[in-house]
Amino acid sequence: SQTIHQWPATLVQPVGSPLSLECTVEGTSNPNLYWYRQAAGRGLQLLFYSVGIGQISSEVPQNLSASRPQDRQFILSSKKLLLSDSGFYLCAWSTGRNQPQHFGDGTRLSIL
Amino acid sequence: AQSVAQPEDQVNVAEGNPLTVKCTYSVSGNPYLFWYVQYPNRGLQFLLKYITGDNLVKGSYGFEAEFNKSQTSFHLKKPSALVSDSALYFCAVREYAGANNLFFGTGTRLTVIP
Image 1 (cartoon, chains in turn brown, green):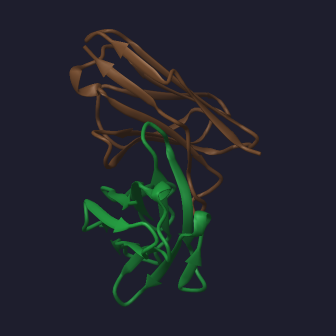
Image 2: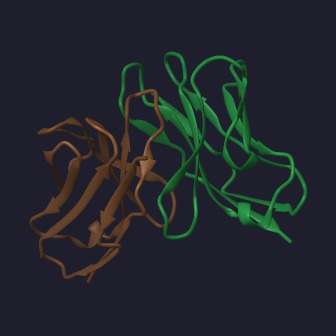
Image 3: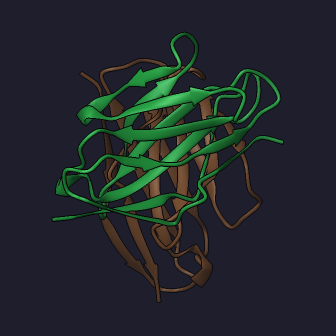
């Protein structure tokens, strides 16, 4: 069966520090991969999605970037974090556009 | 533009009573609709989807949803609520024809009162 792993579960970082959040999927090949941010336990904002290695689509201009170095690995990065980058970051995968997305358990990022 | 609306931020229901969580949508083509549930400090869990076919869709944990094209609605329902159903529920729609990503509503917090 397919599983998705996100780490770390929680992270506290100072303003201006770099960021790297990792997401990996097991049990499927060539998944679509997604990064979302959820603020205050409510709506999800799509940040990036990828349909293949090295293919990244950005939905919102921001301080973050994403990379997909391997088929089942999706990384969210920042060179210098801002206070506004705080939130709950969720990674998800799907097998296609008509299929449901399956989510990891998220990383709660706090910027001090 | 594609959109999905969840008009109720909060729904309270007594344990054992039927529950409904409302969702309306707006898409330019055929809608692909999804319901998800989120428990505290967890990711979203897929409950059910409507792609085509029967208007009544059955999903996980006894939930079902009714697709109504004329009212552009996709309400989530359960005949008998459990305390453990208390969570945050999200409706989602495929953003546009051929899109890979989904557009999520703002969520409805369901509280089932013992």
